Every structure is written in structure tokens, then in C-alpha cells.
Length: 404
Image (tube, rainbow, N blue to C red):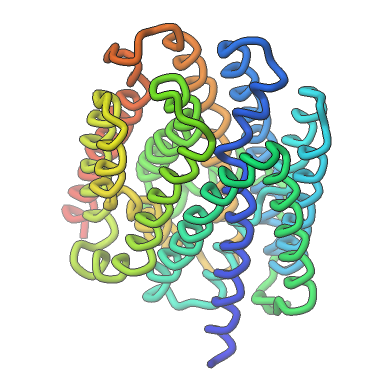
């Protein structure tokens, strides 16, 4: 196996372990908050506050860490991120204070740049032609971790609600040790660049992203796609609890199906889809599909149908890798860390906004009957965002064709 492939395999394994740890806590955290609050309304608001705090810290820190990786290399930044995440899980498992729980989100958000630096690492070791496929493989590793994480977390919660957080901490710290002894550096000293503090802050990083040739309004498209994704991510567990009475174990199974669908799409089908449609056409098709499926999500009152819709929504999982690949090709090799950090800054903004929208809406409809169509309001919002993104991408595609 050549060194580049070995390095890529390590990054894929690192992403898998990291997401596995995160996945363990996804179906459990809302329930943990529920044990510390007195009502479903407070549960929704506190969950939204914790999610927003995480997003705020990521927004301000991920562009900086991306720029630091351009200056000092990917390896030390990756190791710092993984270690900080592991320590935050330990505190989460042990605390009975909502305020201390909030503090752990500050730490995990500040060190949560693993994926942006991992994407920059992949950009270092792949050619522009192979980059879309490689980003799809990262998405697949994410999906595989997401397959097993929520299911295991839901099962462990039946033993003890705090056990999944201890297991997540063990996985993160084991991943840190693995990286410490095995991970090679991908960015040669000759390719490193001094930190531009005007760009290393999140606002400067976003300006840099907007100036990349040929990107234009795709930044707004990425915003729409990410916001819809994070609204769904932040509200799924609470929504199914409110509407269907699901437990963490039930959500673990459903999120297993989500992860499996994502992994197959991004790891197996991505190269074929890119070859068949190209990046922008694939993004348009994926967002149109997601818009229709989200409307169906919000209208259904049958739990079995949710699983069918998850499988039918497979094209939506190709949207972000396609957009990410297109934007990455517009950046130079000296600015991949900054570019990926800027994309993650967008994700961070959306992580901030998503719970403010999603959990607020859930709190307003939590008293409604399960068969009331307004229970699906968060999915209708996501559908609108996906359809808007599809229209903007189509316009951008037409513009590029007319000027080429």
C-alpha cells in the first residue's frame, strides 16, 4: 500500500472513531437533560442552549485551528481536537449540573475542528481529480460511525444513562493515543504558510471563501444545506419523543438506518454519481430529493414510514461532499486548511442558528396532538431550505455555463 493511501486510511479510521463517540451520545443527551429539568419545554430550551453554545465555540475556533494547521501542520491540531473531545465526555458523564454541562460544550466546541483539519489533510494527499471521491470516503467513514454510534449509545443507555458518555470518552482517548503514535504529518514544511490573522478569524475566513473563483453564491447554498441538516439533527430525537413516544433505543435504531444509508451513498455510490452527474448537478438533484422527502417526514404519522423515507432520501447525503469538492478545487494547496476551516465556520454558524429555530418550534408544538400536521413544522422548514438551495445551485450552474 502506498503511503498516501495508508495516510488516507488512517484519517478515515480517525473520523470513524470520532463520529462513533459522538454518535453514542446523540440519542442520549436529550434524555440526560430531561432528568435535570422539570418539563418538556425546559428540556427543549436547555437542549437548544447546549447545541447553540457548541456552535458558537466552533464558529470562532475552527477557522483559527484550520489556519494553525496551515502553519504548524495537521497532526498537532488533530491530536489537540481529539483529546479535548475525550475530556469533555468524561465531565459530561460525571456532572449533575446543567451549568457544568454547558461548560463542557464550550470545551468540545472549541476543540471540535477534527473534521475541518481532516478534510484539509485529505486535500493535502489527493489530486484535485480524486478529491471528490476522497471527501465521499470521509463522509462514508462519518456515516459508518453514525451507523453504530447511536445504536450502541441507545443500548448502553438502557443499562445506565451516563454509560454512553464514558464509552465515548474511552474511544476518543484511544483514538488520541493511536494518532499520537501512528499519524504522519501531511503538510510539508515548504508548503506551510504564516498565519494571516485577518483571515484566521471566522469573518475573515468567510470573506476568503467568498472570493474563491467560481464559488460565488454556492456559499449561500452550503448555508442552506447545512442549516437544514442541523435543524434535522437537533430536533429528530426530541421530535420522535414528542410525536411517537420513542425512547433512546428506538432512536438508536433509526439513526443506525440513517448512518447506513449515508455510508452506502458516500462510500459506494459517490464516485459513480459524480461521474454521471458532476458536482453541481448532483447537488441540485440531492437537494430536490431532500425537499420532497422532508415534506413527507413532517406529514407522516406512521413510524414505519419514517424508515422508508430515510432510505428514499439517499441522494441528500451526496450534496455536501459534492459542494465541498467543488469549493476545495477553487482553493490553492496553501489554503486548504483555511478553506476547510471556513466551510466549518459556516457549519458552526448553522449549528448556532439551527437549535434556535428547531428547538423553539418544537417547544411551541410540544403540547399538540400527535396527529396534528403542525407537529412536522421543523421538517417543512428544512424542505424549504433544500428547495431554495437547489434553485440557487441551478442558477449558479447556468451562470458558469454561460461564461465558460
